[in-house]
Amino acid sequence: MSTELPPQRKDSEVIQILATEHWSLLATRALTYQESLGRVNMFLTILSGAVIALALVAQADRFGPTFTSVAIFMLTVVFLTGVLTVRRLLMLNRDDYMWVVGMNRLRHAYLELHPELEPHFITSSHDDFTGALKTLGVDPSAAPLLGSLFHGLVTLPGMLGVIVASVGAAIAGLAASGFGAPAYGVLLAGGIAFVLTLAGITYTGNRSFKWYGPSIEPRFPTPKPPTSQG
Image (cartoon, rainbow, N blue to C red):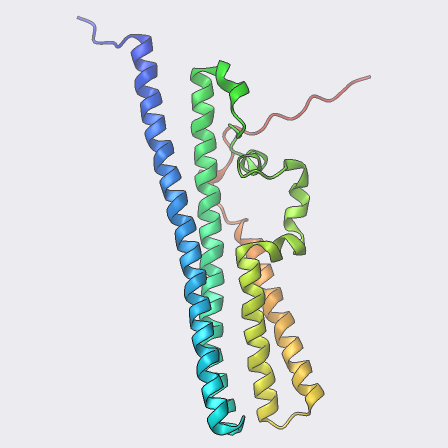
C-alpha cells in the first residue's frame, strides 16, 4: 500500500514548514532590534551618569587636579563601554543581514511552489547583496553609496561611534591639560584622538561585512539584466 501523499497535501505541508521558519526569522529580527536599542540606551545612560558625576566633582574641586584624575578614569570606562557597544552593534547588524538573507531564500521557495505569486511580492526572493538591499527597502542602484562616509555616520553604529570618538577626544584633552599643555595643545590632542578613534570604528565597520561564512554565500543570486546586442 502506497503511503505517498497527494501533491496538494505535500505543497501544503511544505508551505507550513516554510512559514514557520519565516515567522521564526521575523521574531529573531525583532529580538535583534531590541538588543541594539537596549545596548545604545545602556551606553547613553552610563554616559549621562558619568557627566552628572563629573559635574558634581567639578563643583567641589573647581576643575583642579582631582577633577582631571577622576574625569580621565570615568571617561575611560565610558570610552571602553562605548567601543564594546559599537562592536556589538556591528555584530547585530551582521546577524540582521543574515536573517534577511534567510527570509529571501524562503521567499524563493514560495515562488518555486507558486510562481504565479511573484507579481504580488515587493520584497526580493534572491539572497545576494542586491536582493537583501531590496528587502530592506534600499534601492540596489545606490549600493556603491552604502560604503560612503555619510552613510556610515547615519547608521546606529556610526552615530554612536561619533559619540565614542568625542569621549576619546575629551580624555586626550584632559590628559594633555594635566601635563600642562597650552590651549592649542589640548585642542590638538583632542582632535587627533577624535579622528583616530572615528577612523578605527569606520575601518572596523567596513571590514565586519567581509567576514561572512559559507552559509551566507548566494544560492539564488539576482539575475543580471539582459544586455542589448547589436
